[in-house]
Length: 383
Image (cartoon, rainbow, N blue to C red):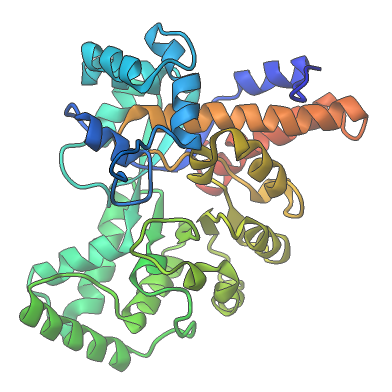
């Protein structure tokens, strides 16, 4: 075992696992200038004048692990990296990083980002992996009202539109309730009259502002309950995100009553990202049989410190309740780096336990395979 806690048997086993990235986004089809690239490296909306987003844990992790993929030494300057990157072209970069990530299946939230991004088929082709859609509930609802659907028909048309997405191959639904309101909504299933009233208020707001943005708590509750009724896994953004959310209202413990109310239905509730509430998420996964979680997004943003959050995620929750995700988006490095840092972190944690005699190597490889791929294959029905 080396100084970082790596064990050769665990390392070899981890490298052989074809991961399931159970929540990520697509990548751009066009080249980015430096400012646009640096904005992908942060949840902030800006780059501080006189600084660079390469001077972050994510920036340094990218230069360490992605530079060799471009034929450069590790830890090159940002300028050297961007020069080499720009010389290769977008198509080659997508093939290089997606094809080298060791991911066998990508589950893509197609609700973000908008613009010129690869479709599901193009991601599958570039990565030589299977690719499945995650239907974002808020986007489906906004598409429905954009067609002129009124309050009396909204529920029926929305459910039909969602069913069509699932019939076309979407394997999960996803909500950004954390961004649009927070988790302190009324968890009880809303009455039909209340939903009609909320749709009426929403349409009036759209007429007044010209903005089609769902944020009413009654409608959010309706969307979540419809997602539960759909029977496929329901993903919920938790914790860490950009400045549109209020972090205190994104604590997954606020979902406890909703989770308890949905337990008998049994639809899997997938808590995404979770930092800094990953221990709270682990508690919910420990208590409730239909709750699962990951620590995606934070793995990339924490860079070298991702070893700590991955180890902490292994504390309380059953290993069958944890999954891997990158939450990569925009540039293929983010999807590649998520996989690389997760493997590094798992190797450090599991390898140290094997070396101390707390675990056997077989147990370590079993857990790595469960979290890296097996749990997602089972819950999403991918196998």
